[in-house]
Image (cartoon, rainbow, N blue to C red; front, side, top):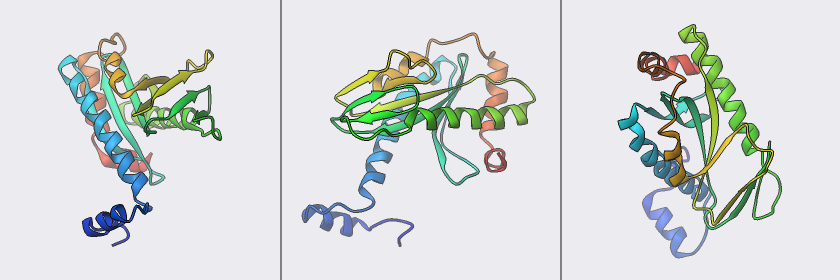
Length: 187
């Protein structure tokens, strides 16, 4: 039962009693990932392919992988409802709190994806990290922050017009590799 989370009745009871459960943040994160996933699916008409929940060999996952004419993008989704977020070169601060390594983690995900895809395709694969914030009230980027693309959920459509990195055949080749779970688990 713990692996599946609380039952519907348990969640309703906790909500009624205004008690948070250990699964609350997981459900908020899942909702944010679904919202970003819907935005990314809109790019499919422009030659983009999307994968969700790509497993990593360390047991984690990559929220979304976007593959298309503009290259490959690892999408790391963060939900902070109503918060003010500042993103620097390596760290982010939510409501002025302690620094969290969102940008550094996004860069590490992109490096992992590049390594896996290049080892399986035998070609250079351009991979860029993207951080997408869901539900934030304000989003500020440091003037020096240029290694990670930073968006709010509705802004991910800005990736759609990008081109010049992969041909249609290369998109399909990379997508074919990326769809195979074994490629990621050996990564």
